[in-house]
Length: 181
Image (cartoon, rainbow, N blue to C red; front, side):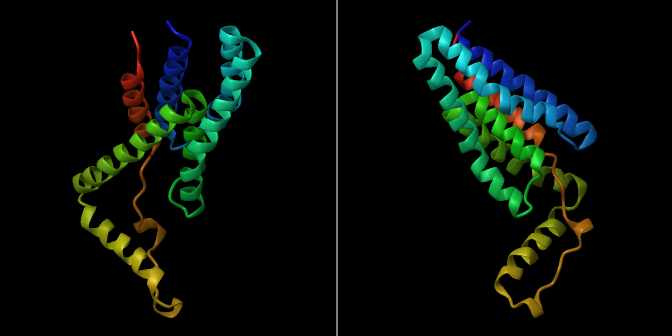
């Protein structure tokens, strides 16, 4: 087994645990997300050192940090506008740190695609799809009208989606696409 396959397996394990916690409690433990985010560059550095000496050590750490940074950009923007929760941002950063920039960003893209496919299906199943689409249109409309004419959508009328299961499914797809026998 190659060294990168350990990281692929670790990403599946971490996102699987995160999906389980998110599904059960709606909360992602910081020990899991931040622990992975902090440990991944050091483990990549150790594998890089074992493979290519100090050059590999610095490259492994640098690519891991770059993966975390690049995979944090879009989720951080979404977090600041209220689109996703902080645990999801940290989890996507951890996935980027484990899988490095290319595969990490691929897993992140797949995560958003899985959520974009799952959310309307779930809302339709619950009979809330058209009501939620109306609320979404109202939120977009509010951007273009003066404050006096804006209509607020009550928080209880907003739909919520637990995102970690989508991240897990997408990470599994990305890992399967990059697995070498």
